[in-house]
Amino acid sequence: MDTTKKQDEKFEKNLNIFEDEVHKKLSGFFYPLFRDIQLNMK
Image (cartoon, rainbow, N blue to C red):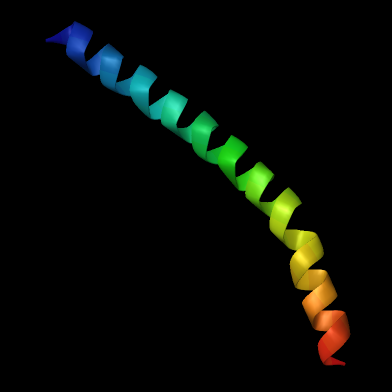
């Protein structure tokens, strides 16, 4: 029983790290696009 809980926690931690990485990559990729769009709209 204990081992499954440990695995779940490990999985959740990995998922959080993965989400952070994806978020960083997406913001790095989309932020310039959004900035350009906002500049063009002014």
